[in-house]
Image 1 (cartoon, helix red, strand yellow):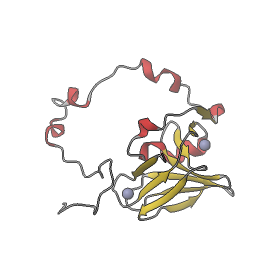
Image 2: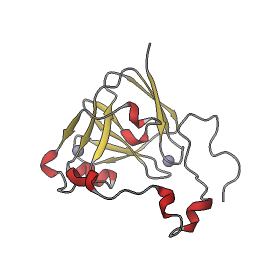
Image 3: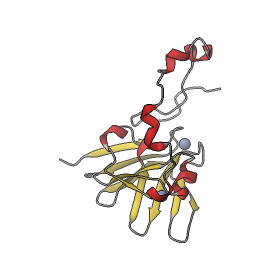
Length: 159
Ligand SMILES: [Zn+2]
Ligand SMILES: [Zn+2]
């Protein structure tokens, strides 16, 4: 049975579907990936041995080097792709179910930020632990696209 993975950007203007077995999931600590994701490292899943379809919208590109394009949603800014001669990799967090594609290797470790290996030692809180300090959390309304395909998006009126 062919595995189907879906996902998209935060606003829902760009959606994708990958058919096939995704085994090549990684994180990259290189400085380019840190910048492109605005993050400590970039989680990416290669679609090399699978079939990638854009089911809604398309990504806009920034050429980050002579060999690599970075794709993102023009509307909301979500980083979505790393595109090189060996294929397209999709940002793991953009999948509807990121837990289905866990990383198996780390790249670019010469630029790994020194605290990354200690994140699990930090104090932890759930979102609603902070509701007294940040009362807006109690009636927050999400405009994020849901973690499944939709017929049309956005639904209804939005401020
Ligand atoms: Zn978007
Ligand atoms: Zn990288």
